[in-house]
Length: 516
Image (tube, rainbow, N blue to C red; front, side):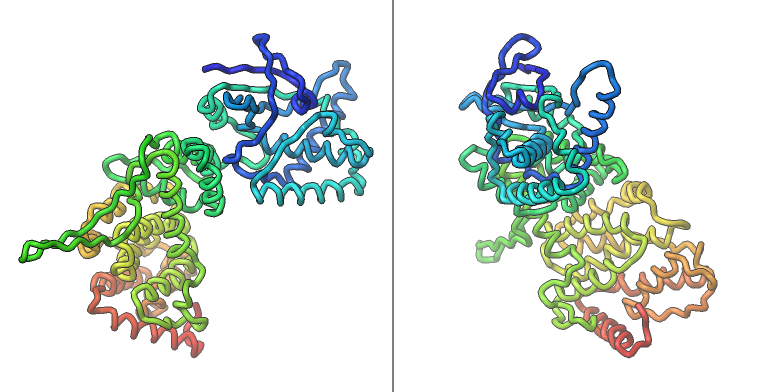
């Protein structure tokens, strides 16, 4: 691994002068931001912190007998063999922000400090351009405030940093992926973006960089994908807690970045072949797309995989009402299976309190089901999955904690039941074999627990009549029996009964009898 390390000031880095590395070699080249880098996103919060930290440094320096510089941290650069440019791999946010501060200071002093530095960075991302304009406007307003001295005292000659320069782009990104940078902390998707765009030919990088940015925030779908790939019986792995973002980031980088192979854009999927008596055959495919647990290749393959599942998540797994399937008064307008699914998901699943960890597993299961079977019997699948996955909400004595979901999946590999099924009905058979008991804890008549509210909310949605004055054990037994009777019996033949029940609930709500 050929790496050069140098210590320099910000003024030296912004100039075109050579910088001598620790081993005596010269580092020189024009600073550049690769087109596939994430956009510039620092804002007011990060700028204020940077200026405040710099002021603390000046205060300490004034009381010290020793002259020293403000340490900015390390900046990772890759020196291109093609044009000698020093591509900024890690440090864009800090360097851009400091360049903006220098520019605003030069305007106030009526001299172009950046001309002295000979700095010429270009930004192709519209998001970067908009953020730069926004930050410049904020800095110019800041100059008019009582804190203007924070910019006036800015001196690039007093800011020190460590340069890490590699000749190999891969080596640069290995350093990058292990950095803990300040300000806007890199998420897993931010890191793997660079990994996959590097694997694409240069003439296509701009196109796929734009596609990636158009996907927006990938953290929600990536969280579901990691759960789906980690929670399996044959190779079960612990999904890191959201309270440990560094472990979450590592899991994402490993599973959807470092572990991806090299090869074509391959989508694995299943199809059904019907052999006819005349010797012919008919091929059917439930869903045109990718398998959630399929092997992935770096570059276009993984980008298309992420795009596909983000489209599924956005279409089916958000609380926003889709395609006018549900009217404002909470009644189903079009009695298609998809309409029934949306009604169930938006009016029950998204309204339940104290179920965030359970919902993470539930959404993962739905994503796998939809990617495998499309919309086939989706409304029935959603309810049968609900009966299984939301059972800890009533079978646990206390609240459902994050760790208990991992334990539940190990004991009840519900995601494997879906992936092992060739048809929706085969999947339903697996789900219907599951049994649970409702624990009576916190269900006493005088209690208003989260568990009790959950039970009455579910019963209300399904049109199940439950007497509020039932004793705890009787309420627990009634809930288990009624939910089993209702959901286990669900099939295409029972849908008309469900419509009647949902209309009853909707009418009662409109009449003011029920309160959700």
